Length: 121
Ligand SMILES: [Zn+2]
Picture 1 (tube, rainbow, N blue to C red):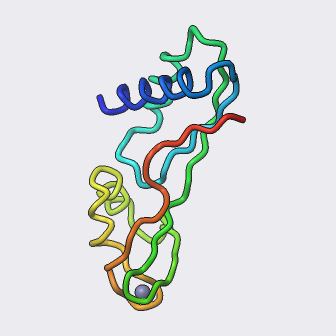
Picture 2 (picture 1 turned 90 degrees about the vertical axis):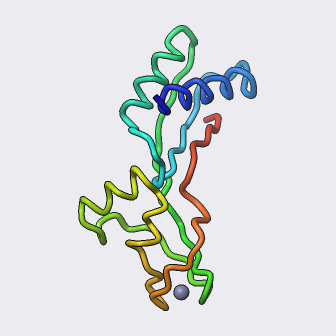
Picture 3 (picture 1 turned 180 degrees about the vertical axis):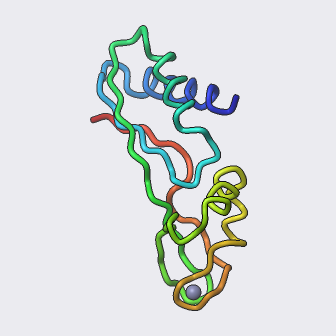
């Protein structure tokens, strides 16, 4: 049900912060514990009565290694589907499956690609 509260929060942001605007881009972080299709459906339902257009874009996750400062992108395809699923449902497992490509450390920080952001178009 997480998706429904996120959809409502997104609508509230649109209505309260950007009152009067009609076109938005919704950025969805790649490391996000939600069912994106369900979120979209819930959001369309929330804004059905409003005169609003939205488009969606996924933001790739960006990591910074705490050991060597190397910045790298989470490449889904470097993991098998089971590992991808684990990360989807429990983002913290990314520290088990992913290593810094430069120094192989799993001590890194996710600097981008979590959460949902709304921007007017
Ligand atoms: Zn490193």
